[in-house]
Image (cartoon, rainbow, N blue to C red; front, side):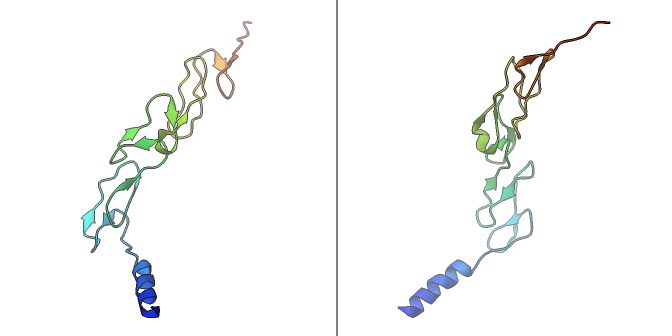
Length: 109
């Protein structure tokens, strides 16, 4: 029983470490991930950074979404877009505030 447990533990300790951009048993496969995504060292599957989706992390989040797996909904008002990574609003002309909900006043001199 002890020998079997030690063998099982050894299997979990046998981790593969490849240089960045490589994967596979001998680290001889090249990752195809884009947009600075990480690649699983065993399977080559891409792990996208926030703001990106797709098998190779090749697509920015669709409009109105941001973050990890594009799972967050933007809170911007007045047709203002948000950053696909951070969710920070880019206020449309004439609006201001964290969610672009305030009218910007212009002084005429």
